[in-house]
Image (cartoon, rainbow, N blue to C red; front, side):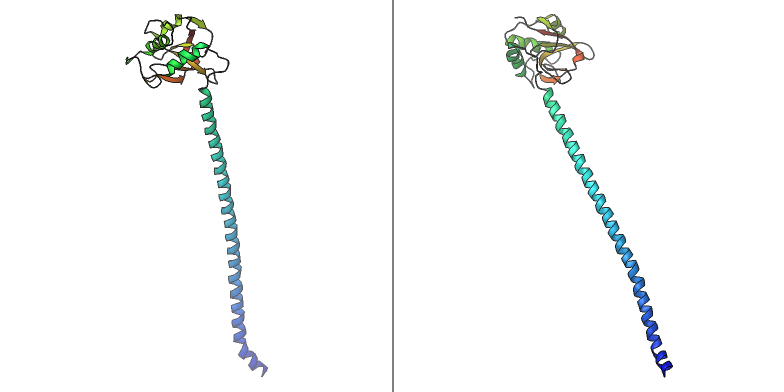
Length: 204
């Protein structure tokens, strides 16, 4: 009797055992997959977080660099401290700046000296009467450095010369000059101090 009952239930027991093993076999990889996915998500999230931090710091660094560059450029156009041109600042510099962006001489070439003489005349000073930039090397009184209101006499690439009035000094000691025929117009720009071989001021 017992054997008959055992034989009757044996297939069911075997079927339950197979189902149980199948459930266990399916559950273990699923857990492993869940763990792997969780680890992958954590890695990706960490990578994205670090990347965002890097981009943020790089943006801040770049922004600070641009702000510093703008600040230095603005400082370069500030008249140098300690350089006083007295009345020259109020007349020669102001007169020269009136024509920035234009060409009041009517000449198409070699007109920086013509412009400088025109500015001096309209500011109440005598000029050199010459259209040669080097004529200003022997004009007025020689001064030792780039004084605001002084006239800077310079060399020019390819020969010739250039002349203009000093309006300031940048952080490296280079003069800021308003001059004619700078890109075919009157302009205010920084010039290398190595180009200047004379600074002079009017004496009348």
